[in-house]
Each structure stands twice: as C-alpha cells, then as structure tokens.
Length: 311
Length: 273
Image 1 (tube, helix red, strand yellow):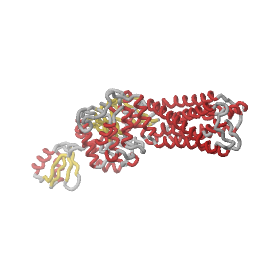
Image 2: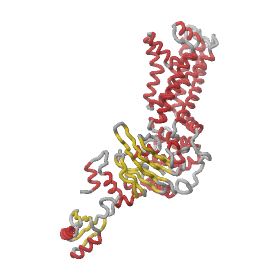
Image 3: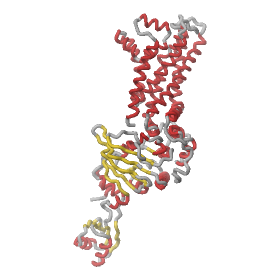
Image 4: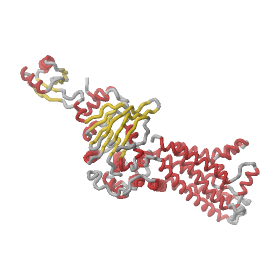
C-alpha cells in the first residue's frame, strides 16, 4: 500500500510535482503514466525517501520510508538510471545490500536465479547490457521478498523474452496480494499488465482509475465505423437522425452519437448495402493522449497530431 | 507471501529483520575493502612514505634532523594525500556512479552509513600508517652505515612521532571523508583536500609574513603534523616563535575534522540523491 497525500516538490521556481494525492492498493498492478518530465521519477524518489518533498507526504505500508525498520523487506525499489558501481559484480552489489539487513547468501543466490543472472553473477556490472542491468535492478528489488514493489521504467532495454518475463513476474506479484507500482511511458506495455493507472502531467494528477474505466472515457470509444456502397446517402440519413458523421476516406464513415445497431437498421431501411460495420474500442493510448493533450512538456506538435489521428 | 514467482519460500531472510548499526558497518566495511581504490591508496601511502625516507637516507650527508624519528615521519607531507583522497572517494564516489541511491534505499536514515564508513576508513588508515612507517624503516636499512642515517632515536621521542604519524593519517582520512560527503563530487572534493592539506601550507610558507604563518599554524595539515615532528623540529618552531606543542597541534586537526563531520552529517541526511 502506497499513500501519497498532497505531495509537492519544487526546484527553485519550477514545480516538478504539484499537490499529488493518490493511493496504490495491494493485489493489483498499478501503472504510473505521464509524458517525459511529468514528475514520475521525482514522485517515486519522494515515495522511497531519496528526495525530500517540499510539502505533503508519502507513506509506504503505513510509514514514511525512512521510518521503516527493514526497508528492503517492506518495499522493493528499482530506479531508472544508474544505481550500481560499475566495478562491482552483480553478486557483490546484491551482497552489499543484503548485509545491511542481515539477509543471507542463499537469498542473494535465489534472486540471481530468479532474475536469470546466474551466468553473469560474477561479472562486473560495468560490462552489462541495458537488459542485464534491468534484471539486476529487479533482483535487488526482490531481495527482501517485499510486499510492495516500486519500479521505474522496468521494461526499458529488455528484449522480447525479458518483457514477457517481467509481465508474468508483475502479475504473479499482484496475484500474491502484493502492491505493484510501475511507471512507464509505453502505453501498450502498461495496458498489457496493469489493472489500474495513475496519470500525471506537469506534476498534476490527471486520472486515477481502473484501466477499463479510463479507456471507456476516451473520445474514440464507441465510435461506429461503417463502410457502405453509398456513403453520401447513408451519411445524410444518419445526420438527419441526429448523429455526427465524419467521412474518413472513400466509402468509410465514422459516426458518433449512435450505435452500430441503429446504423445497420437505418442502412437496411434505405436499402444501402453495408460492406463493413463495427464499433471502435478505445485504447489506453487514446485515453492517455486525451488526458495529457495539454500537459506535454517536450512536444513535437506534428508527431503528436499524427499519433492521435484526430482532426 | 506464500507463493508466486518471487516468493516460493524466500530463503535466508533474517530471523530478526531490520537495519542495525552493526549490519551497516559490515556492509560498508566489505564494500570499502573490496574497492580497488582502497588498495591503490594504501599502496600509494606506503610507497610515498618509504620513498621519502629512502631518498633522505640516501642523500643525507650529515646526521638528519631528528634522527630516526625525523626520517620515519618526513614523508608525511605527501603520504597523507592518498589517504585523504581515499576518504573522499569512500564518501563521494557513490554519488559519482549513482550507487548512493542503492545504499540509501537500503539505509534510509543514512547516518549509519557515514558512521560505518568513518570506522572503516579509520581502520584502513591505521593499517596504511603502520605499513608506511614499517616500510620507511626497512628502506633505511641498506643505508645504515651512512653518516646521515641513524637507526636510533636520540631524544626518546620515537614512540610519539610514530604514533603521531599514524594518528595524523587517521584524522586526515576522516577529514577527506567529511569533505567528500559535503561536496559529493569526488574530483572537486579531492581538489579541496589537496589544496587545503598541501598547497595552502606551501603558499603560506612562501608568503612568510606573520599573519600568513599564524594562519598556517591553524590549518589542519600543518597543525596535525606537529604531533609527528621530532623534538628537534619542535625546538626549531619554538625558536621561530611559532606554536610548537605537538598535542595541541593534533587537537587543531581533530577539531577541524570533527567540525567537517558535523557539517557533513545533515548534508548526508537531508539532501536529495
């Protein structure tokens, strides 16, 4: 359980995180989404005591992180970026952490196997690929068998095998009843694994919801696409019936304010042959783009319009 | 946590969970002793200290000032530097490579880390100091028949000078540790240590004015080395009208070190990493 209350971080005149309040519950995978520079990493660093909030608080399993007696056995943390001395071996790094908690060598060996690092455990971390470094980060996070894990961009740099592995791992942690909180800027990745999602932009909370509910709210959810032999006649009839019609290309129309059954019935009445008829399901990506449309810190405008594919 | 990928009977978790001072000390102890910088700094200390003794023994045309005590402690001006730098690297190095974040995630109260490092660095410096004096003595043996070399301490100040040499190295390494913890950038903190302990002394000596020499007497490197100065050298200081009490001098170094550690503590505890 992670409880963030009115959390704020200012650097000089810049407000990186602005009054965030949300709760991450056990037994689910909660995604943490936001554009680059939205304050995701800063928020996570405040949750685990590496950065001091300007105001507000963050509590993990009911305590401020710094007050935990055995933090590695309460919260497993994997941060984005370098956190290991390049001259140390994977084994040496994990042993160094384990010693602070009196965790034994057998557990270090266990997480090394779990993370698939057995063959490189005695090699210097400086020579690791990004994927191996990520796996070492996961191993460190699981060292104390914690009920809560906080992972910043865990799939970065993993190969497809690694991505599948981590999806399975996160799901099984959540099924175990643990709290799983992970950030990502890859929507598809989060959609594949998360049940809930917290979205921030420019340090402000934009959404804190079930992924399904969020997707349903997206602008394109429920849009009816109909391809017919006579798009113009059908379009006029639909507009007359109160729907909003947008010709897409050739014989395809996108219709909002109605549903597929109504459109099909109307086409049958008119005797217009329907070639294709369906309802668009919203995606997390679209919902996310709707939410963060105004909150992109570093935006290339053209690319964004193309990604959104909205007029 | 019963089953699942991460928890099929997680083994070897401690019966009494928790971060303790002893556990943190053990972690920092192993980290420091297994870092290659430690071996380099100890080796550099021993070699520099012995080299100075060797060169003075080889070149001495007349009995060296202070006799054996003088020869054994002469190298301290340069041999203190690698240990000061070791202190800097032990506390600032992890900020350079990002591993400070791992360390503080495991020990979020942070101060036990500083304490554990101070204890470890003290032990490393004691070892290096002992080896340095022993190596200096060994390097004099081949020249035992030369006029400038005496393997006897005339005034019975040998114990104080040898102990003082080691004590000076201890304090200087802790001063480096504190500087590294305050500045957090190893290169910058290293330069500060180098300038403060060596170059500033030289500069003030060159200036030579009464004010300059008074300032020099209050600087940690100069003051601390009085405890490792033979009686003969101290008598010279008295004749020059300069502060000469060896333990008072060491007290000045210790005061600087304690002050620096007191500044470092809140920086370590409170700053973002």
